[in-house]
Length: 173
Image (cartoon, rainbow, N blue to C red; front, top):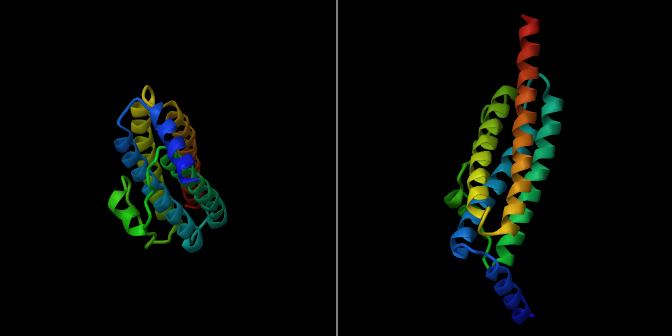
């Protein structure tokens, strides 16, 4: 079985026309971001307080699920390329592009702002990965394109919630 996996990884690596080890490193950095984003959304949904809390909780829970799906896509691709995905949470903090913002201020506007910032970083990270893989790795390119589309949608969803919250608060004055 190990021989079959090794052969598959070699064939998977052979279609990549770029430095595979560098690509695996970049995918692991993105994986770190996805795990931290998953937890940031998940825990934010548990602690958020304030107006429109239920709508925000619903959106954060949905985004958490989608970030976990992104992590699964990245791990699958890392393994296909013969790499080892990050194995510990400590590695997530060492490798992250975007970091982690703990929702220490659980007011809904602050939680939304933190997650908008995270999505904007993710969009930049995946845009860069898209440029790197466009010519060099069509399989990774396709995965990154799908993830990037989700991240753009996440930012839109969060900004729309923040605009609704701002509008609601202005109407009360």
